[in-house]
Image (tube, rainbow, N blue to C red; front, side):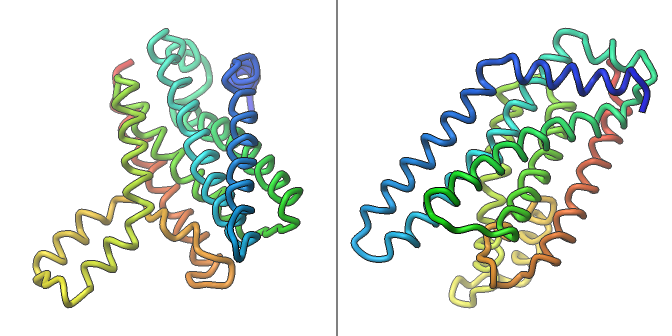
Length: 245
């Protein structure tokens, strides 16, 4: 890796560390997890299980979107200020710029996920490597979607709205597919095929929050995540190559 390439990651890391929003993310994450734990403990029965469910859901929403939104804001600011042209004028290629942007977002996501996991272990005395791995893959997939939207659209509001919609709909993709197969809903074979084709490009985030011992297995989740990551990185690279900066 050249000095120019290394400087891009160092520069981005400095920007993230210097912003108050970076430290605010950690504070609000811990505050949200504490509230989820408190609400779970108020349950009359199975308070421990309720706390695990609530804290796990808060962690996934906060860590996944909490790394995607700052990355989209950062890259959008680079494009608006013209700094992207500065970095690409050196030995840093467009594909390397995409990969290093992905690494920056994933580093932030890993920090939030590990902080969340340690805090949950402190309160619940429960720890799962499989849950952490699926959490990381979920964030990684959304980060590739973030890169695709951010490097192809100029409006930050549009980018972050699309990110939220993709993540929200992706969490319910399994429900949508199951509904298409329900005989009592009366979908025809043609309409079912059309809906499945329309849902195909949407990442299936519903797979990543399955319980540890349920299907699909972690191996299947890993393969599914790697395929999605590779696909969106390739699409981002192809579209960014055609873009005039």
